[in-house]
Structures are given as structure tokens and as C-alpha cells.
Image (cartoon, rainbow, N blue to C red; front, side, top):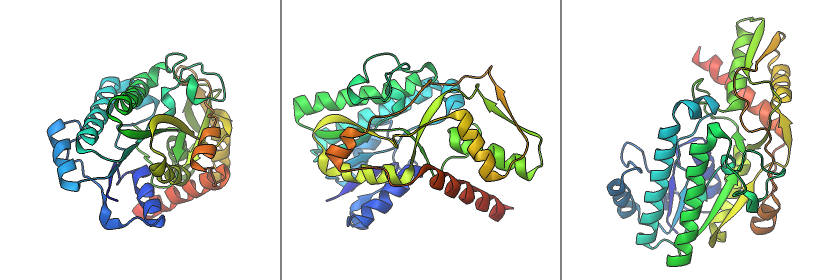
Length: 311
């Protein structure tokens, strides 16, 4: 079985590759395209990619992602790039006659005030949180496209909806990182520079659910053999935590002794996030294995050691 793994060199993709190999797939049969060679927002480049790798299965991870700040600054780019990449990959998969597509969506597609825990059937019950809406709606629209392609062309697929991911090799760029790497960087820098305070966005009341990247990668590999009618399947840890409490945990692990200052003039994002993962357990036989505190400590340790090596 030949697998096209878009985004395969990224944070999540590199771990998906690891678990594909662990599951017995041959490395020579896994094609990871480079963006410098194939622009997936371009239909001709996408056609060349499929000709070059001749896949049986597509795992579509390639995406333009970021935290609240990046989503606010580049909403048009986030919508266009994610929409076009998905459209081109799905259309070319149809024309190429692949067995199936594993499409990775996002928790950002759910309504801003969705009933907690989020059940897959509730994804259309309202508009997403405004700062994430362009990205979330683009991803949600691709799920509609996959369902339409199953109904008309019998193109099999499955759409996975992971909560916020974290882990070693995450994006720690100040302008585009998500909340965990952003907070880790703030507290590690403050500790090393003996600062008196760390400033955090919002008031800390919003909640999030976090899933270790390895647990997400295992779920993606399990989904390959479950492609069908473009079902949405949540991947989450079933554990909800306030951002304020998350900051206190990271403060403790990093050893920071100063004050946390909350900037309520900045957005909180979606008020609550928690996924119902019953379907993932029943359909995929999947459950998260990595405890949050252990995974968080491991991520902080990885980042701290990386900073030491670079100095």
C-alpha cells in the first residue's frame, strides 16, 4: 500500500510517520512531499504529486495553522490556503482513484458555544469562535466535500477532529504558536532572565483540552482502515483544564517564582473545549495513553534542553 502523507515532515506528520513504520508499513511506500517541490494550493502541482507518488491512501495533514494571534492577523491566508490545499488533494484523489483519504480537521470547526462535551453531530449547531472561524470553516467545508464525493463518486474517507495538540517539536514561534508552547516559552525565558512577571493573554477563564501528539498520531494510523462515508471522529483526552490552571502548572514545572499577569484586553478564544471521544473508542479502538502532566513535563524538558544546546 502506497501512502501519500502531506505535511509529513511537520510536528504531527513526523509522529504519524513513526507510527506508520511501527505498524509495519514500508518506508519506501510512504511519500512525503516537500512544499518547495509541490505547492498544494496549485492544482497542477497537486496533479504532478499524484503522478509521482501514485498513492493508494492519502493522509492529508498539510495545513496553515497558528494560535489566536496568527488567526487574527492572517484570516484570509488561513482560509484560502487550507481550503485550496484540501480541495486540490481531494479532487486529485478522486481522479486518481485512491482507496481512501484520512483528513485531519480541527476542534476549531465546532460552534463557539457548543454543548460540552462536543459530540460530532453538533458541529453544525452554530458559528465557530470568531478568531478561529476562517480556519475552522475551511476545514469543516472540506468534510462536506468529502461527504459529497462519497455520495457521488464513492471516494472513501474519514475526518478526524483532534483537540489542541502538544508535545516535543511543537511550534514555539512567538507569532504563530499555540497556547502550550507559547506559555512554556514565556515561563522558561522569564526564569532564565530572572523576570518578576509573565504576561498572559485573556483572563485565563477559558478551558481547553490537550492531546499529546503521539496519541493523535496513533489515532490517525488506526483510521486508515476505517475510511468510509466521511464520518467525523473526535480525538481528545477527555480532560478539560482552565488556561489559568495550565499557566500555574507550567509555572511550577519551570520553577518560575514571579507573578502571572493576565491581560483581559486580549481575547480568550472559545470559552470551553472538551470532546466526546466515544466514537473514536468504538470505531477505531483508540484511547489516549499519555497522561497530561507527564506529557507536559516531557515537552518542557525537551524545550529547555534544546535552548541549552543552542546557547
